[in-house]
Image (cartoon, rainbow, N blue to C red; front, top):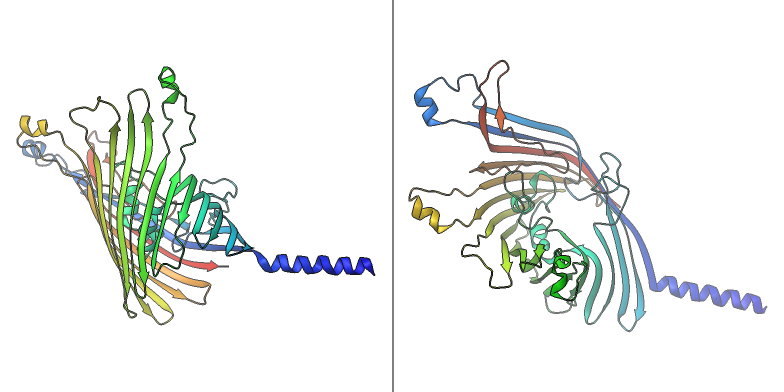
Length: 427
């Protein structure tokens, strides 16, 4: 009898525990037939043409490179994850979130091609009336505005042009590098009961070795590399949602000469839902600069500045949704004023580009959808952005030489067209 009572008591305790905590398996599998075609145009030299009008006769005026295949994450990022929460009582809760990327087009687990990892998100947190404190790898506050206020969610051929530009290209180097997530971070989120106001702050540790005196200065080189801090603050009420964010990251550091190579990301975004149509807008400014901590700053210290903007719209149509965006970016490097003094005719043409994207998503159910997207990018002044989906980038043609000739022509990137036709299933 006593053993029966003990067993019943154990079952009762187990029942209470299971009622107070939960673990969920979740994921998305997204696959598409995708392609990209990049066009380059011949650059002619007026002096050469003056001497020989037929100098470029054997060269095509334009040439293209293209690539087609099965892609993943063109509508929503493919993933597999586990999340859980435990009610601690008194309004407190502990939770975890482990989420990894899936390359379901070739069966590999993570974006790097290895086995399944949890690099999309791996956090443990404590939440309560004070808000939430979260530790681990998570989205940067400065990334949220780029993805939330992009109708395509920074996925597939329709990815916001400014998101492509921040990541850099062959001709235009990245300013921030990876602007999406920060590892080794501690984050704080405001509680959700603030009348529509929301916000977060994050600090990402560099986790580099640091030595205690200047005699070991060379060992301190890179000690600040990887450090990140940022925050986001917004207001959402009814149809309106608007937020601004700012963050700084140390991309490289040199203790001996007292420099930090910094990226400074400021952006603001918003949306307004009219019911029959939802409008989106965002503006992004990312600056790459070298910060000098001593009196060793040079007379001319050039910054690299990226400005980007997006206007978007979504329109519900029956069981589906139409998406459209227009985006533009411009990357400018500060020019030494002495250049203009020595060469009054000097003109600096900053690389820039425009993008148009159009898409349609048709929901077959709450968890399954078919989708189609097409995007067009026009490059100027040497920019070489392309409208590729995940893993389907292809280089622009930079030179061309007809077989059996000695003539070689130079080509500049001009335009790119990308498309996705796919299916997305969530569970």
